[in-house]
Image: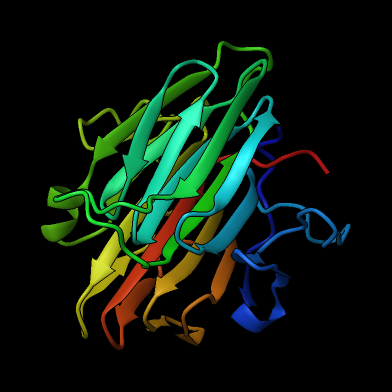
Length: 256
């Protein structure tokens, strides 16, 4: 990792430009190089390597597979997702509940569309829509770990809410912990006309998960659009319709 000051820049990335994986049970869009969608000029921004926008059909999902040395944060927008892993952790993730899995020296896990409603146990046919984000940890070979935390009440109060952080200054009860002291994820749910100010950091990644917003100085961002900032924080983001935005604040970058 490097902390060299970057040249100020705002790089707008449109939803239509993302790599796409479509198979019978999965519709996935990749903000960065992922799988067969490899571009040596688009491997990461700051410390963020993966920002996958996934829709999974009911009763299907990702079978058991391995990860190592990665902090994986999952944020559900619609539906519910079942997590199981080789350390014995299991849970159902739904909108407003943040999840972090630390792969560490190695973990196996599966993620599937919850085919049963959380209340009543009745089968449903709802797709699950979620964003999965990967950042590198500070150290390799750590013990695997898992954490989930209800964030919904904080989001209802408005503003930019810290959802996941490894920074010492984000030590409130509202954030799950990630093992990178230079990174934090913030989320805002905005009604039309509401706005938030972006953090001031060397690297930012703004992703419009739902709805549409206007970014000060850059114009409109629709659903799936993103902005990558280097040395250029502090702008305001204003909702043009009901919207949800995900903002990674990063104070270091992967070495080139």
